Image (cartoon, rainbow over all chains, first blue to last red; front, top):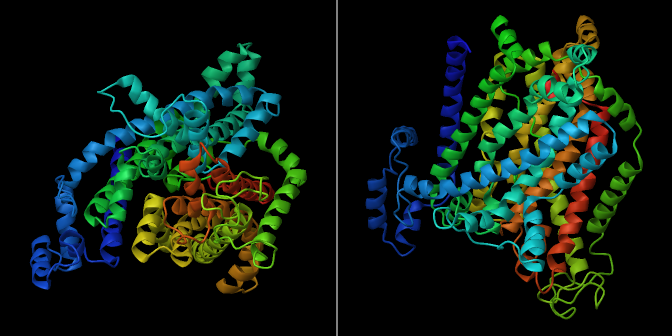
Length: 319
Length: 308
């Protein structure tokens, strides 16, 4: 990967980061509601609130506040919660591992099932396995995660008491219990991704298998499985890598409902709680984190393209 | 989106990459088989349309149909199972589940269709203009769309709805706002494929002005793909409303919505699972039908962003 290419992509990242941070800031500053009431309670006097506004810098012009906020955020100071006075960064640090573990587990689950299934389905397009897996995947795509979560709780926590319905055990406390407590949420999140990955990889694999170099490999008499795994799989993983990579970014913010449903103390739950409590500062911090995470995931995926398929790299340098 | 979304997110990084991929990937032949099979709209398609028609009809006629008041407790014994007293049973307060499900459909459909209609109008206009005029305008506008897409959709919706106060209007507004960026991207992609075609060039040579070309050459071609995408988008919108309602941020109680009904039944799964399952079934079939109908139509007017 050329340094020029890398530099150019990094430069393109700047305006997006600026826009994303400005929007996070504006979103929560332009909305109605006075944070001083949230902090001091509705019975606070006008003077007390004025003093607090001064302290928090709420009277400064919007651009000044934005610059201050960005400068503070860059050094890791995301402000303190209006409600609990806990530094936002600390709250995020506490919650992030839960969300990340949930994400990792769900993606792992989705990929481990989707990749082999897609390979098998693609070897015989329109075969029995292909038809069954494709239509099952289509069905799963129509199940919203809150619905699937409720269904799983009913099956695995109420009817058959295999997994706990709610609650979270930290990994450091009891690894086995930790995995058990994350099983249902991870399945809930993973199933929809599984369906997407299966569809993507299957379609791309079928397309790749039509290419001339595959015919060439067959003509050479290479074994079918070898062609499939060594020749076809890698160039077929474009869309899969894109979507899987972006999902890691997207899902950091996409776990609200699941965390709420299963009572997991993650970033999603933190954001939802803070929104309900009108704790702007914390919401601002988590929204910024999620948005920046998504932008960075997008960037990394873009770099991965070049590593996965040298043809893209050359085409781009030539262009 | 909630998450996110029945359609695999069609996120394509930078313009350069799209073109580069195009350069190295010949159009897959495998699709041709798929497509000819899908060209005839099969039984499943018409079943989907029938279900959608049924739900729309029931929701529209909810007040005329011989149903009890959906907010009236004491219609039946609380938590009674389907078939015991009422066809679909009663909820935790003894309200009729069938009436609640039908009235809940109203909220889902109104929010789903009107938010996407608004999104289609704004996002569609942005997409067509960006795809037609290209240049700096396109760069800036589509950059803005990318930024919007970078936001966790549900956070935006949650924040908007909770600060503006939950009601059918604010929920629709929030979901409409979220739908603008993805719709604009799809419509732009679709416009791009037509903007350079011979018939557009011919119209221009004949002296047609931009506005005329857009209205009578581009729009009629973009519309079919846009409308079939819109069906899938309505499904996403219905799911989003469901998620908001599930978190208690949609139409306030006691008005029924599918999402809030599912949430109400959540704590009673052991004693009365039907309280969650009835609205779940209704929502599942509706979303599945919309997805299926949209997907079938789309494979006829196929435009994929990645294919450009």
